[in-house]
Image (cartoon, rainbow, N blue to C red; front, side, top):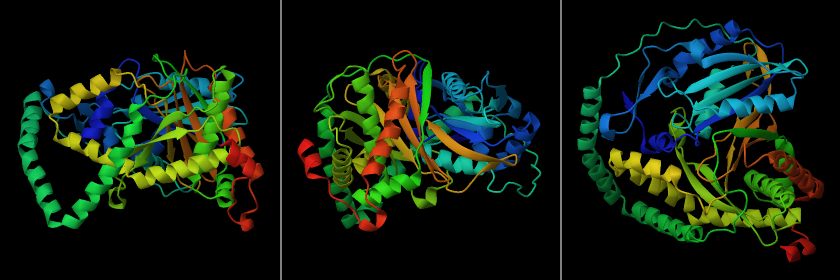
Length: 475
């Protein structure tokens, strides 16, 4: 048995009939598509590297402890590795519709929480792989690591024979309760040990406290709701999904010309997309912002390879009221720098860590309440995850490009994930099926946002540029 962390458990507890907490990746591969046997053999060979893929969730009776991972004695690989075909003509639209349908279904909690679909019949002789894994198993960074584990770095890797696997005995309810009680009794000792360690390092403790205090100050503005838009409201269980394409080299050219980070450029392009979406819906944008949650990984280098969640968050405001692209980028750059200096992400991570001291029963109840509480102050989520920059292969076929999927929940009707792979920088856009039928406008706007910044960028050797006087005045 391995107990979930409080953060992992929260992703499980907030899930309900309309909020589905799985993340995913859509990879487009060169053809021909592998047979089901080839795909199955390729994944089977990698399962020993990812033990969690053969484990399921068990809940502790009466919520006396956090859920635990246990081996699934009835694990069947064919249940998780699935094959399907795209309807004619097998274009991008058919693939996006398929992804929307797959992601609209909750994962079966009685089995390991993942699926992998192979979709044949994509145009130009290509095929697609749709991976789907519950957020309680991984965060975005570890999902990327997991993709690198399941896929090969060479077209013809060395052949390996899977070793026999036998599930450990599944615990009964009495054993689950006994483990939970033992963990709870040990918890005060762990807390005292942490306090003692902090006292031995008073300088470090004071610095951490000051940083958290600054971060808490920056949270005050979240108490003020942004003007209402169609981006918030009730959602249903069904999803739409779209994508936008970019190149990492283009974004780096923009960054070199105007300064800032890759993430600043990405958020500025996304701002253009939301501006186009709201204008297309006939909603005002002058002087407006779209407030977004930006997940931030707090995973230490020595924690890479552990498949759990280690994330915090920043809350940024996308300046959709700024028309000029360079001024928009400058505004985004200054805001993100201020947020990083504020310590907001550190404060959020410390607050999340405090949930480890909460009784598991209250944690379960809190997660369920949070999932049903309207989000009046956050309108969307934008998460940027760096991926592998070398080609990956499955069954000898090269993955040509990859797009991410991010869940939506609460009252946020649209979410965006960004994933870089092999020189590409691609956006996956999730929308509520009923209330976001026009997310293609958002996708087109993101691509236009990158193009207009690239057109305005100076050659790399010219160095960073200042916004033009007209741009500053308009901002």
